Length: 372
Ligand SMILES: NC(=O)c1ccc[n+]([C@@H]2O[C@H](COP(=O)([O-])OP(=O)(O)OC[C@H]3O[C@@H](n4cnc5c(N)ncnc54)[C@H](O)[C@@H]3O)[C@@H](O)[C@H]2O)c1
Image: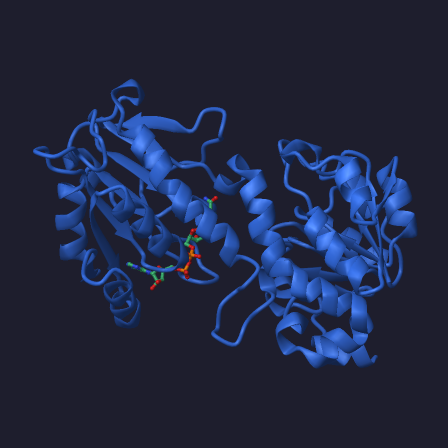
């Protein structure tokens, strides 16, 4: 199969669909890879790096789209990219179609086979191609929180780990899933006093076992949450109720009563945030203050570390890319119900129920569409 890797064109997006190491794997399986000029430049992969593993470099995205049987990207295709898709071509990338009627209409029109990273599933009930970005954001949240606690950011002027003779900062992580567990790991590593709150007892058990009791794992009642948040120096918001907006667990009243100079990193901001006073911010201007509490609410945290994020994403996507390339989309989708769950638009038909429902479009089950 011919695989195409265009340069990402969304504003400030430096990640790339495939690393040179991933390209080498595909070529090892007998496929051809065409990479757009400077596709990986933003994170230190040169055209020569791609050529060294056997890829061909093409000058423009148009040439990559024209040649490829499968396009591998990171972000949803922008309008100019959508116009280059064609009947039967595979598009494998993040799509996030439910809130995006324009993109969905263009993908339907293109008749391409559009597989969305974010809806591919695994046999543990997880979303394996979304998880790496939660790992990155969870780990980054402690870096961001540590910075927010510095005096120059209007924080309390505390070091997370303290020093011998000085108590560490108290970090309260709401939600012990992928974001929360990774945040807890970084905070413990820095020597902070860490508590994780969750409503799922199995999650609390896992946290307890993972940290051998070094992290307090507390059931998240309204009372426990209030107690912990009011005592915290740093709060990390990492809750998720799948398919729903994040519940506003930290209220405006809590914010008023929190310690002056304490900080909140609301990672769940991409689902509306779990703090009543949260509003999305950007890497260029990541924090603002409400009632003396520093708020960090960047909606695309992994974008700050595109090199790490690209490797993390590729580790997760590569096995699927190889299967799609080796078997062709039809066989690969028929053989794997988890990959099939990623099929959002198939040759003009909407094959993801939530997307169809959100946009009031006709839904065709993916297995029906594939055999149509
Ligand atoms: N800002 C960013 O750049 C960025 C990046 C990655 C992920 N995220 C977001 O971070 C959030 C968390 O993602 P995740 O992958 O860790 O999800 P996850 O499903 O792995 O974990 C979420 C946890 O929240 C818990 N939870 C739900 N309701 C709760 C409540 N009322 N009190 C306490 N805990 C509760 C769940 O039991 C679960 O353990 C999501 O909204 C995700 O979209 C944001």
